[in-house]
Length: 379
Image 1 (cartoon, rainbow, N blue to C red):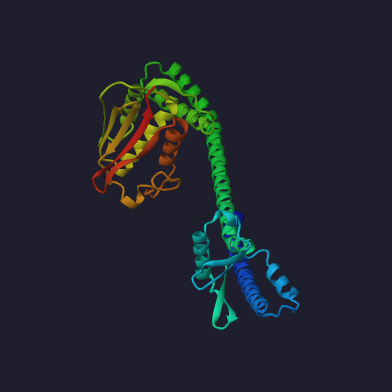
Image 2 (image 1 turned 120 degrees about the vertical axis):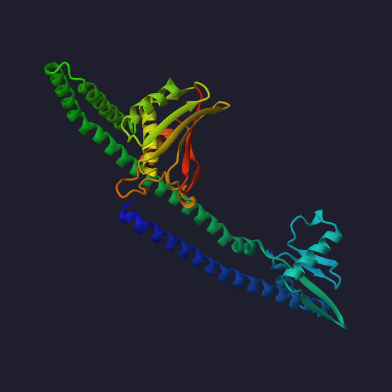
């Protein structure tokens, strides 16, 4: 990830938190102010109601009436001490409710806001029970809605950054692979030409056959690198034959202290890019040899379960600790003093991205060994 991205992410997080906190504090102040204002309006309505009841017949009561009728937003009940509704204002679809339901609604209002007492004189009292206006409800929910929107934006932002990082890594990986293939092409062609010249000069020397095999191997490696980043062409192939051929080749390249065996409970076909899949087997075996420190036994077992082909690569090496089981496929992870930690990462990419299969650590015990499992669909 670039230096700009490393600075951008924490900066955006800080800005997002500041927006959320600032919005919450501001909206909370507005909501509290609105709640206080609505309470004052209800007290004013209570005073106006008292004045109406106590006023003389000939008095001008237009102001009191305007105060009461001026409330067009706050739902309110005028009740007796038992919450029986005497009158109401701004109750949506009031005609749909029974008197019992209206009484329960008034009681609920009273539990949220202390009822305001209307003194009628002579020891008689009525009560104003009021709820929250729609504006109050919207403002109360606004910080939550804003938080969810910002969370969604943050998730989208992180997803985009991760995608950009992954895309950047893929471009570097593909470019490096193709450049490696290009650079290997010329010396390999020269080696092939020199071998043909030496064969003509020394026709009875058998060592050129082995040299041919290694040069052909270099060609195969070059071909593999050139296919990284390209659309993989899969063809039906016998998995047994691919593994047997690979085991036969690498057996002669490893130390005699390393034994490799292959067994299968049948013959199975799968859609493979043979060149790349041979690379998978080779890398897993090399990884096992490193884990065994150059001495031990590798067993490759081929079985099936329904329409799935299972390939287990088992070794009796030093094993993998529990905390590292999920790290072994990460690019750059390695326990060797020398190495880039790309082998198992490459294996995972070839199996899962190119062959739509699955690879994972089936089991591992420190000091006893590890089993890697590959799963492919039958052809």
